[in-house]
Length: 477
Image (cartoon, rainbow, N blue to C red; front, side, top):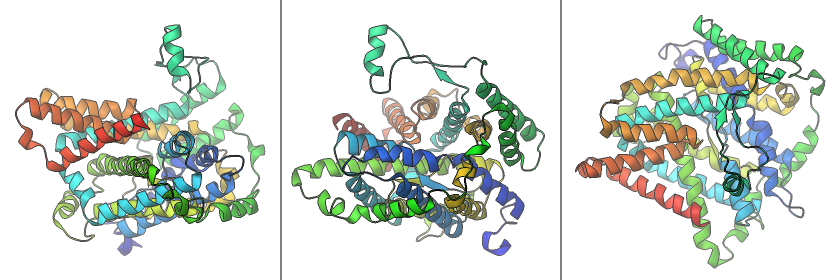
């Protein structure tokens, strides 16, 4: 194990990697329950998208992607169907555009193939090479803001100002009322909020005191503390229930992307070709930059991708660097997930929780993958771990990642403006790729008005143009 994962070389040990893998899993285990809930809405009464099949597809896609990441790339990143991408799949592709969920899966599969091609042909590594160091630091700090924001939201320590308006009608509701949507601290007048604060304080104390396994200990202790608070309901535990039905449902989702309602009918209407291509493009662009942002943001500061590894990424051929291998693992996972029956599988930013707990090698990913596999029978037990117990891990890792901002020259507006927009948009738009888009856009503007357009890498020009095209596509469709 030492020789395979190179533990000493990466200044880690088996126990640390196991705790890191468990921490990552618990930070992202919510996807097991949220993804089926989200994707079932893509089905219809006469063409249902079965939740049990999605549940198992989520598990198998996560296991496959995370194992490739751990065993092939030897890095502590976990993969699963991405939030945001599953919403785009359900509400835009199937809901607004009217594609069947099988056709949407076919488009996700094609997206994965495209991502494999641009990885093998080195386009992805060229994108990374083209990003200036100041923006890379901004992406790192921005991801810190992003995951801390996720943590605060999951913990229930944020609330939003408008009531009586649904997601669908909120835009029309606000002008009529003169209201606004603003985040605020909730009133500490219910057990869930107080419990969230207790979990945050507990984990903060253990982390500050450098207690070994602080994050995982806090998650376990927080879950136990949740019992008297009434947050954890032990009566909900029922091992093995519904497994047979889930496997029966998997028979419906597995390979559906290639059936008569999927790929075989996707290109039947030539008039829809432009719409199909634009949709695949939107899937691919978001997936690509979410992954690149996660690797840059978490890998540079922690040393997972060393200076030597980054140099190998730029100059080597084949899959010589860990970054090369990690990008390939991420690309393959999307197509594998589509085959099983789920939306884009991507590298989870919550992997930062395990990295913050000391994870440095693929052993942590193997542990996370094993936990996903065990979830087939342990889902009812895992479901009792409340979001308030895992959210503090994201908040504190966010704190750690803000150190990337120290390497940005904030007194130089030429460097500060693109860095600011990259970091702030990442959190406020709730999207890594949108933050990168904002950073690229303002970097190009600043360089052009300063007469330094020649300093902009051609790949950065192309990437910025693609982002602008993507926003136009989203506005049109």
